[in-house]
Image 1 (cartoon, rainbow, N blue to C red):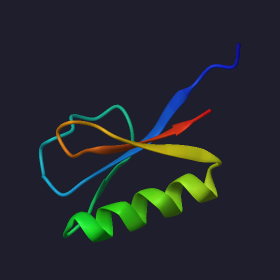
Image 2 (image 1 turned 120 degrees about the vertical axis):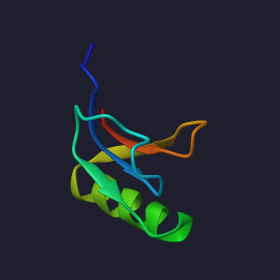
Image 3 (image 1 turned 135 degrees about the vertical axis):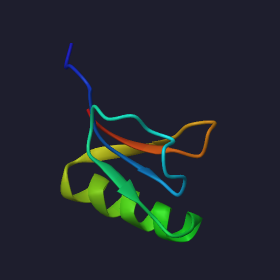
Image 4 (image 1 turned 45 degrees about the vertical axis):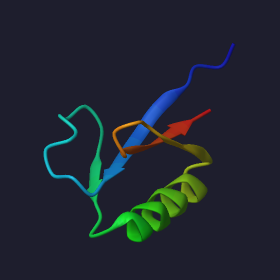
Length: 60
């Protein structure tokens, strides 16, 4: 089975994520979605939105 890896996280809330992966901050939800989508396309990943509004990009 192929191992999955969290590549990056995108949020509009500073302090919502505590290290471990590159963190990208957006000014609003629209920009957050655009950044996450672009990162996923570049890295052959998938975007997943968590309940707290953080988007993670996972390489499958």
